[in-house]
Image (cartoon, rainbow, N blue to C red; front, side):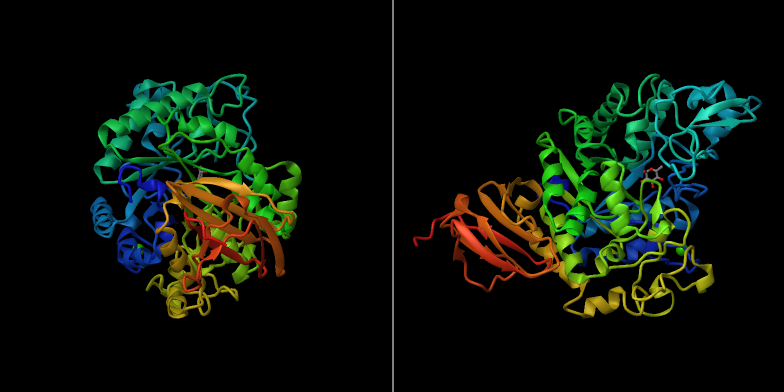
Length: 550
Ligand code: GLC
Ligand code: CA
């Protein structure tokens, strides 16, 4: 693996510390619990762990409401536990990515407490740390993000007798980036986490740092200038640290977050994600084709982050209203499955718990552009609980074993931070790591095998992508090429067995080696290749360099 741009070849694993493994039996997962499961993650074949927020917080937004940027949330453990986790991860060649939540704090953060209270001894110093106005008339062109819970981006504070600005929950006041003190304070937070050994930082919600009247208050030039300053700081202080940005925007608006290679190393490709689901629902590659055509090239050091699911609702912000309705109708038929502009379900239930469909979705994830992110539990096909509040239904305890609490915790079941999924077919009796590790045909072992295969070919992370047209809309076929290596990927997006014909004139005569069936002898690629794929079947091929004489 190349060292300074390791993230280009990496597979990431996103995990919620609270949900992963409880080491001390208090019902809440913790850092020593994660450390105890590192061998599992290494064996799974991921390269980097992205930890959801781990710092002090009243937890009204699962830690995205920060009340102390440098203190570990006590139920998770201590800073020394964090450093141990980093050391243990590094010993296994795993990287650790932590969260930076620069846009807002909790209203319980001491900065906000001082800012809102004119009688507070530190009021003068923190008065302008947040965005205050006498009325709620400003920035009318900014949309509301959490439409199910918030009516306005302004909330009145009776102590300060003024309104404060917030792009997310009302209890998450936005920091004021026009204040140079705030700019510096956030860089000190970054410095702190680099000192603790973090290899990368996921920058939460970067589009909203600055506000300007008459704009949507997203993606402003001032915001990009600050992110470039953050990058310059990181490059100087801890070269090689990876910055990953969560700009949920259209591809052309995301592109500036990479700058000229001087802003973020990575950005999630939000618009691609729902289109993978649409393509599978419609048995038609067109949605994927369209979004890839709209996807700009990146500067050399940069990389897309791709994903199927994450800790949030499956967001449908970056689709047309018609496509959103289609996605809701198809994937969230019950109202309770919907949240904000999205769907609060996990991967396996979304795809009908259908193994071949799950494998096809994952195969697309692992072979298309960018570095893939796997959401904890999706590698064993965990279920969700749509009756839990907000997005908590996709953040339930990891299912390790068939026994009590699914092996997540020794606490009484009532003491768990959230109930284990019990509704069949997703209960721990069927869905758990232990059983799947022992079953050669399980989703877990399949995932392990594909991750092993993926890491043998740099073209997956680094190669160019060339889509291949075909008469049949259910055939998704593409070439990935990097430094002389050519890979051919084919997917049947439909439920039924199909015969496809693919124009392979670009590779005609070169040997096609089947990477998924290495025992099969390589065949010369015909100019027009006719082949069968089972419903949701797929193939990974390496196209040899030499021409086989026919
Ligand atoms: C990001 C996080 C989400 C959180 C929000 C507000 O979108 O992914 O979980 O609620 O920021 O901090
Ligand atoms: Ca615990």
